[in-house]
Amino acid sequence: MIVNYFSSKTMNKKYQYILFDWDGCLVDTLPIWFQGMKEGLKYFNISASDDIVKRGFQGWDIFTEIGVSSMEVFTSKVYDCVNRNLYNVNFNDGVLDTLSLLKQQGVKLAIVTSTEREKVNTVLERYSMTNIFECIVGRNDVKKHKPDAEGVNKALDIMNGDKCNTIIIGDSEVDIKAGQNAGITTIWFSSESNRKYHSYMADINPAPDFVVSNFSDIMNLN
Image (cartoon, rainbow, N blue to C red):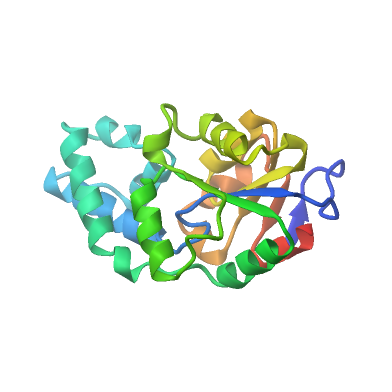
């Protein structure tokens, strides 16, 4: 289902450039990151409710607030969990078919993520999908991460993209804010699974331009 928040925008517009978030948007990795954050807290003997841990998806400052004394160590514990599970990562339902169809239509596709590009490539190589994206802008490719617009702007520079014809699709507030900060159209991918980790997103202000609950609904863009 597609929800249009702003009547001035239309899903009938032909978008020539589509930027995707990685975790939770293209791939089903939120449970892995959630488990990693819990393992990191366990190392420091910190107990926290699931709701507190889920706030880590919007920024890890919350973990220093609740007692993590070394973010370097915490990060290594989280990444240990993620790295152990890289070969278990799968694309979300409808993603592979949708990407292939968009590519056939001549739409330029890119990934803008706070995850390292190497982790993304590991999964793409396993699915023989490395050639479908014009570029991948990862954590180490920018100085400022989402919600800053640097990653979005860098991807558009690489693709020679036009902001008026660009849309970003992500599952979290930082994705939507990054798109808004860059001045492009935004879509919140609000699947049933994602809402378990981003339930507060219904109250985000300003709201995303569109909401989709099924990935294949993106095809209604073009």
